[in-house]
Image (tube, rainbow, N blue to C red):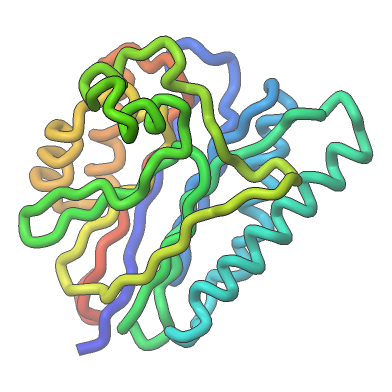
Length: 244
């Protein structure tokens, strides 16, 4: 059995924002979500730079090279963002989150890269797990026991990101995993995760086998919750190569 990655994505500006600063990539080997920050034009540019920089990784890659190529690509994306700021100082402070999943050529491994507060979740054998840890001020408070996860959902500083790709030194997180047939990954910007509860996310992933329909359902849930931010969703399934 040879495992493959099959993905669908939906992005929406939401009900409040005048534009969409999110960028997304879905391919046969790579899926990624980036959420720009630093003002309309700058946020758009930062997320686009990040996605355009890592998009060439969407090709067969050996298991042992997955983390290395992701690390190099994120470093290059940060350097390109720095160059864009140097070219136009009014862009100072722009940056982007990035959460990316890279599937190996053999279908026997995958790697995840993460910085910021876009998230990756995994649904495996009915168990729904948040795989990434938010780089946010509020997450630090949760880690310190100052507030709990429920209080974090409504905290006034929940959007304060402590790490992003901004052309400055940062420490993205990298992890590897062994894919299993039937795994369903959800990558999303905080326009989804900040307004839709985890149990509702899990229910949608369970209830909508079709990837496109599932992604649309998740965006709809965010819109029904007020859609205060841009919303980007990737639903990626690990399937046998004969499964479409």
